Image (tube, rainbow, N blue to C red; front, side, top):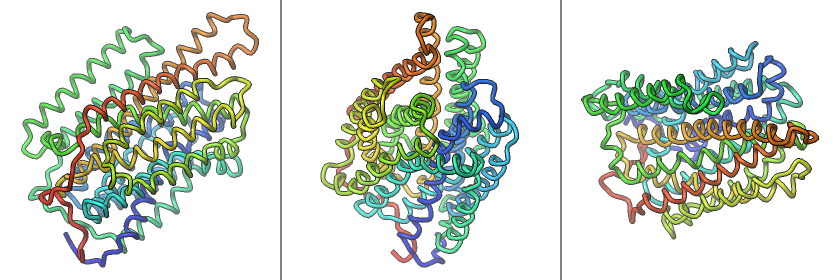
Length: 485
């Protein structure tokens, strides 16, 4: 570790949390802008709009393991600054997009940049704060920002879309990113790698990234083309071959991208597995609720954004108290209870109506969900990072973020398919119904939210049976603070 800079722990947390906020923001900020982007860039169908969201989350998730390992090998601050810089450039060009293909490609590049930036940011937090109460408190703030960023993104996106242009949803990242880079260079130590090698497993990165992307593409296309379609089966088969080849590659490599023994450390395997269904719920909720508010209740972009504001406040309130709760009860019990809040809130939302109102149909559900999210993102981050050796903190961060992003991408793909099938079935069964498409659309949201309930229940079962409560930090694995502590 370089140790050249005085330690400003809270300032360091603020810098990397702002970057993480920006990354999470860009998952949801476009949701409110989707109708405007659809018209501006002449999309051929609304189903293609999901690729503006999925292209970002897919590459983000696909490249996170590479980004996390790179932070361990080449220095956390260095990779953090590179990631932020690329994110700034990609955001600028995304805002200048002139076609649907261009914005999808640039969103994918934004995702790659986020995959470099995000695990390095969390790794810096793990290295700055000692394991135990100090780190739990920092991760409570981190978790609140990460979860609240999604809700805040909808509001900010609504304001920018309505009063400026949808393009400003991306332009806003430019000044923020530049500020983060300058602050990081001044206040964040470079945390030079303690590993004896600088070998980056590019073959492993290629296999896992292409395998995950192929899998998600197959899941996205299967509902419309049919699960037994020969092309879809070919994609599923290819994904399985690539992912099996990745595991074999990691077993044979001297310096693998993902040393498989990391899954034996603490709750890394269990926490990452639990993360999948949780983010599947989260992303789908924002996607479908945004469409409901704007296309059914006819809310403006700003009004839609304001509708999600309670989520930010509830998450912030809940997350800020999590360090005390975890200190008293541990992280397993909160992690078991929180998915039940998600399930309850999603079940409530599954009852929305064409003639519904915000306060009756939406508000109670999102408040219940927000209470669960504030608990989940803090407790699962603590569970997934406790006991991780410092030379693997970037990789552990990358794994957690990977499960989050891929879970969200797969969940959105599945639920979009469920929604599309429900619309088709409703129209077929009710051909003479007045306002047919509108009622079919709302009916499709019911089915999507109910599948989301299933995801939440799965998260409860996984946390109940797989997560093991660690009684106290292990001195052998404690991650030291920065120089001066």
